[in-house]
Length: 513
Image 1 (cartoon, rainbow, N blue to C red):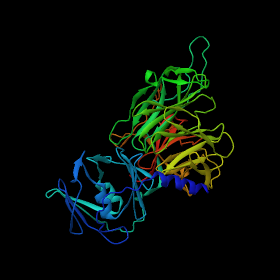
Image 2 (image 1 turned 90 degrees about the vertical axis):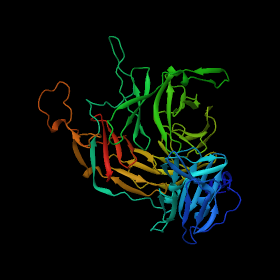
Image 3 (image 1 turned 180 degrees about the vertical axis):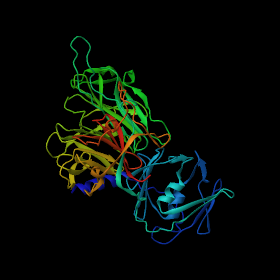
Image 4 (image 1 turned 30 degrees about the horizontal axis):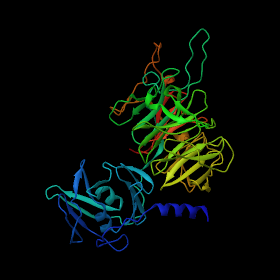
């Protein structure tokens, strides 16, 4: 059986069609228009002026109007599928696909993660969902009359249902802002510091940065040779940029017991752990870290936010924690972890040793970049430039090859791969379509440091020990993307990049605010 058929069979077998007592469907995505009226606190509603009774009255939860899922989806004529194993509901309407999970504030619109003000919940065996989120994504207009407390859902002017999200206006030329300076906020670095004694040894420092796709950046920080931390930088508008320590690895909650390859009981202790790489999963809103022990014989993977727990470990000594990755799957308990040395992918279950694996065809030492889109796992091979569709336990299949000369760095955000070739930024989808994203040859560099509190640009601070007048010589120069630039994409689609020559954080604005 072809791989695509196997994958679809696996997905379909995991999805259970959500059945319940029938409710009359008054409209569908193809049969006409519909007008719905509901009233807060009342079970009586109307569809095209025909009275119906709801399972539960619409009501506010954390200032968000929640309604029975069954009512709103059938009234609009949406197709509903329910995965009871993970409590996820998939709604299809026209060409639009929405996915939501009970208790999870991250929904997906055509595979793109979207933050919900209130997650779907279950009350008295009734599934409640945020009505505005569903209706507006199904091309409906939602209005609320505060006097009568009536909610009206009616067709929007645009009934094309082409599935497109609002288009942001791209700037003619990207602009570059300095967000920090070497004298104000120092970006955390990791790597062994100079050793003590009459003959100190010096080691190059490194830097690890990840974004939650909203307003927060996370860094691995090192204070000395054995104490590591995770620090957070908030970049919200109207707030002063600062670093906050949110986690110390010098804590016994990172200890765990395990059996070595000979079956003997052993214990991993927190002070053995050296964190190397951070990973943020938008779907689950969780932060993960990959690291190794001091002797590089053991690799360990932890969830570190919102809680700490050991995810998986490996005692082969073959994982490269600088280039490998960890990617949680939709069930929240299974993880795909790469091994670039052997060019394989492990399927790890929470708290267990890496055991089951499958080969990803290609040369060794490839850097694989994972992306989950519509519940399907893809990886981009930076060296071959191939995008492969992964079916855990079955195998991989090349679905596209990117038409680009080289890939220096690749990350993922909102269902896309973002790529640099050492000169420019590009965006690519899983079908291999690649488009220019930010042309740095024409970028405009602004002077000073952007002040997020005032929206103005402050003068660059005087370098330590300098007493003369400031001039343009102290302004950071153009960004050199280098071999492996560290960058992320924020919620506005703009680029945050660590300038490893000037040692500062900079923002490349691509779209109008």
